[in-house]
Length: 467
Image 1: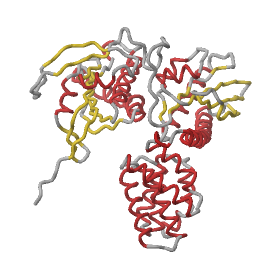
Image 2: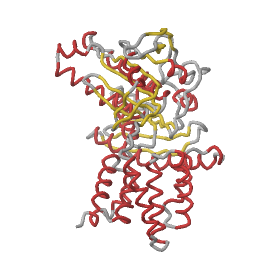
Image 3: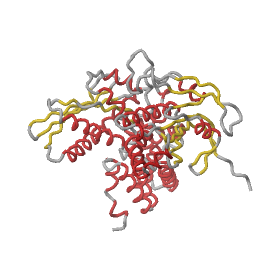
Image 4: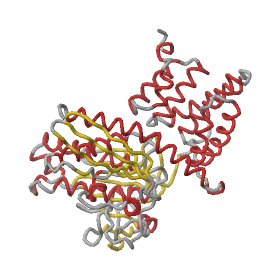
C-alpha cells in the first residue's frame, strides 16, 4: 500500500492568547469567560473574518489562525490590539484583558483542518505580553506595505526549534493607528483582492447630542449587515470611526484605509420622525454610485435601524457588483485574475441562452484553473452546464459535468451563500438529490437571508421537499 502523502502548504500563522489568564480565572471564572466571549463575538472574530483568516484551533484562552496573506495577518493583529485598547480604556487595570500575539510565515502540515509543524510552533513561541511579535519571514514580506514600524529584537532560542529565530516587535509609540495615516506621504494601504468598502460615521444633523448614539448605532448595523456579504471586504468600525467629526475627503480615505468604495450619510430628527440619507461613492473617482433617503418613526429604534441597514445592504450589493463588473471589463486581458474572470462571466451566466452559458463557462474555467477552490466559480460553471443540458439536447456528459462542479462548490463553499444556492439548484435539477439541495438552500439563507440569487432558486422549495 502506497504511503499517504502529508499535505503541506505555506501559510501565515497567528497565535494569540490572554496575558494572565490563570489570574483572571482565579479571580472570577464566570465574569472572565463572559468578557472573553464578548471580545470574541463583538471584535475579534468579525475582524478575523474581514481579514480572511481561519481559526483552526482554540484553547481556553487562545487561538491559532491561518491567513493566506501575511499583510492580512499583521493588519488584523494591529486592528485587534487597537480595538482591545479601546475596550480596556475605562476598566481598572486588574480587569483589563490583553493578548500577546505571535505571527510566523512558514511551511505547515495539514491534517483534517488542523495544522502542525515549525511554521505553527514558531508563531506560538515568539509572543510577548500585550505585544505583536513577528518572525523575520513576516517582517520581510510586510516590507513597507503597512503604516507601521518594527523593532528588531534580535535572535532568540525557541523551544524545539534547532536554530535561533530573529524576532521583530510591532512598535506602538511612533506608528499611527492602522486606519489613520496622518502623514499622507506614507505608503497607502494596498487594496484587498476583493471589493472593499468603508462605512464612515454618519453626520448628526439634528443639533441633538442624544441622536449621536442613534447615528453611531445606525452605522454599526450597516457594517454588520455588509459584513455578511462574503465577497465584500468591510473595514472594521475601529478604523472607519477614526474619521468621526472630521471633514472627509473620500480619496484620502481610500488611500488611508485601502478601500475602493465609501458609504457616508447623515441623520436628521424632527419631532418623532427621523430621516436617514446615505450615498455610495467610488473612492477612486469620486463618482456617486447610489444615493437614497429613508424616513421612519422613533417608536422602535432598533427595528428602524435593522430595516434601514437591511435596505441599504440590499441596494449596495447589486450596485457594487455592477461597478466591479465594469471595472473588470476595463482591465487588460493579460492582467485578469480569477476574480476579474468571474466578474466578466456574470453578465453571460444567467441569461438562459446556451451561447451565453458557453461564454461564461469558458471564463470561469480559466478562473478555477487559477484558483481551484473558487467555490462560487464552480457553482456558476455548474449552472452553465445545467443550462446547456436542458437546452442543448439533454446530453449525459453535460449533466455529469454540472453535478461535478456543483459538488465542488458545496464542498468548498460552506460560507458562500451564492455558491450554495446555485449549486443546490443544479443538484436538484440535474441529480434529483433534493435532500442535498434543501440543505444547501438552508445554509445559504442562514448566511444571507436577503440574497437575491437564493430567493430566485427558492421558488421550488416545496417540490424539493416532496410536498
